[in-house]
Length: 483
Image (cartoon, rainbow, N blue to C red; front, side):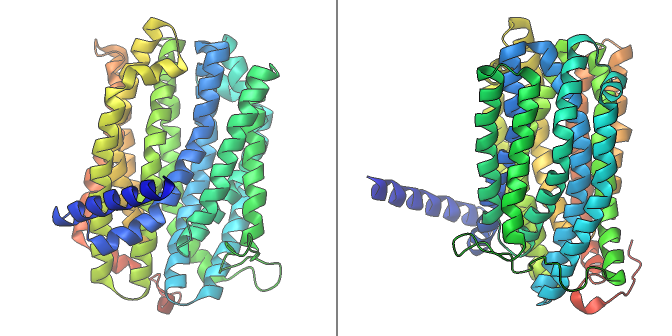
């Protein structure tokens, strides 16, 4: 039976691959490489994103809409900090993939060491600020009453786990940069399953409420960090998974030229991610003016989009790795072909996935809230989130290609325009016009649609190829001004 199922799955896969090739979406040989890197990262993305989603669903079932809104406030602060780690990790994978692709493994390992040092300097004050100022921070965004209490508790309990999350992001990107996305997938998926078990038991079994949800999440994130640390030091998991660019105490930890490159590539990524995180706070404040039910609905929509974004985790990192390695080997035309094909594949996948979510919007909303009015409001946000996921997915593959080249400044500017020139203004219009909550729907779409268009223009211009030349192994510390 298993053999027949496996053979059937293989035949379906071959048919799909052939259809995509014939349709001009992606070359079959590049599809194999892309999916080999992407599917473990997609699973990893679902595993990571599921933590907050599971917490939201369990708390919604146990405590209701106000507690869901409180977690929404806390998630905004958690996400802001996590975005810093994603930006730094993005710079890490860019330099690791190019140096590893250029047969400079020792130099790639030194990049990782410096990334970890920078991560430690960044995360320490964030954790301290969240633990000491949680209640004030949640209150600033509009939280009050039960929502304030829930948000404060969750943020205090989960904040220390950010130290592990910073390490986890860098470790995952390091593995991706050398072409291994399976090792972090296994670790992250295991952490996700642990989180489901712990959160469900602590909240529903032990009756610890929001504290239990936060504790389950924190413990599962720490467990992932400990597992990844084993492989990152060059040790294998039963003969597999040892990092080919291991981190050890011996050897140099600092290189001025590499430090400048890491900061130069990472800074725009961090700034872009932080700006994406910051814009959530005024959106939550606007939503709070319509009541806790709207805050909860907005957060559910954002969680659904985050889960859909898991596909982009895979396609984006595949684009970064494959484009970066081809550029590191000096194969610019092939790098362009890989980037173009991954972008087209992501567009097809996101149209199909988003359509499925839109069709099931009401049942999805019912997982998080049970009041009929709340379900209706939440379903509307789920639809808006699913629509916005299409440009999100396409943009993820475009920016992944640009990131593989070290071209991180343009995507930063594009993101700022989408967020602050379009998304936030249209949401604010809803406060003073009959558009109302519709302004938040439009904001969800605009913040992803505008950057996708601008970054697509950049990719077609091929200017990113010129940018990449200053980061390749033979470039040394040379600076090149590229617009």
